[in-house]
Image (cartoon, rainbow, N blue to C red; front, side):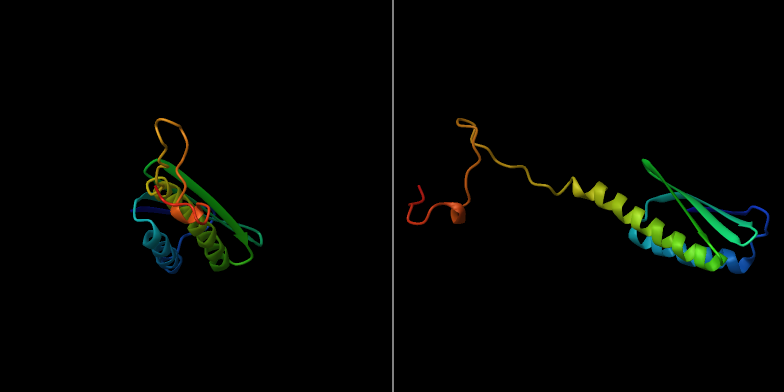
Length: 124
């Protein structure tokens, strides 16, 4: 995973960089196919804004958060990003495990399960 951390009017300190890297470990725990991460830290008077662009194979995920404190903004951002990554992962893996419904070729109907049949009707 390549990490690009930039500060718009501020310098990204090693403490902020370590905090962002520690929080991004939570994302890579859920989804390890992350190629590139761009994080932009910005300050405008009392608004601390954090934006992230996460590039994976086949999808780019964008999230941003605005808070009064930079560390709080990073926490909110990681929560948003985590939800988006988990949703993307579920979409990728959800299609593989859906079973196909068997249909009778001659009639075109789906057969009923034994428990769904009427009581007292013989199986056969």
